[in-house]
Length: 102
Image (cartoon, rainbow, N blue to C red; front, side, top):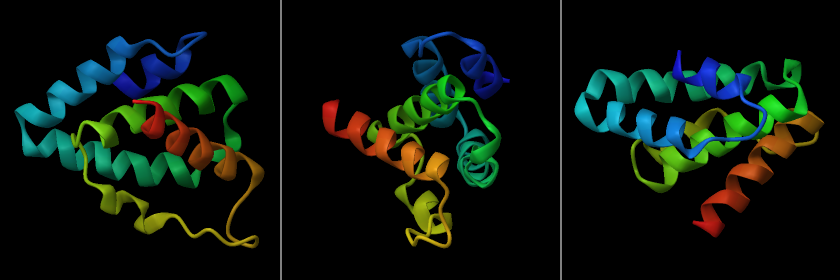
């Protein structure tokens, strides 16, 4: 629900990142579910509009930066020309830029 609400916003609202972070830190089950969602969202990232893609990347970059989810979620990411789409490359790029800017 948090991911979907975040995607519906015109611009990224930090509120959703903070909310997701608190859920992840409260209970391990939420953390695991957000890690699973990272992989699932990454697999269907090519279906998202640019705005939704950006919001999603910023949400997950917040969770990664605050250590709310583990960095091993990147195990599903294969950075080869055959395995990525332009959307997935943009997604990874935004995540990296946001983590650097924190």
